[in-house]
Length: 92
Image 1 (cartoon, rainbow, N blue to C red):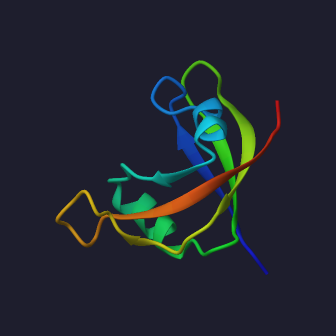
Image 2 (cartoon, rainbow, N blue to C red):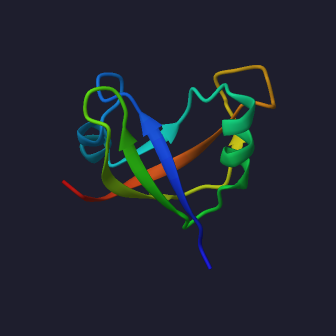
Image 3 (tube, rainbow, N blue to C red):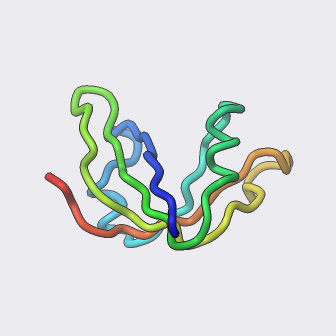
């Protein structure tokens, strides 16, 4: 059974509309130790609820995790991981 996760983003940085436009993206930039533990638990085909923080404060869409976690290729720190996500459908 697949798990469901909430991925928080500031819409002025990377919004649901950006994900829909791109189709797929690397979910990167996670630095919090607690959030990295959650990111490492994600698996291919898990569901991700995309949450807009800031003024919107709403879950705006559903995406799919399309890769397991892997080391962020932009960083030299193997503890910092990323996952790939694909846009699904909007909720608003």
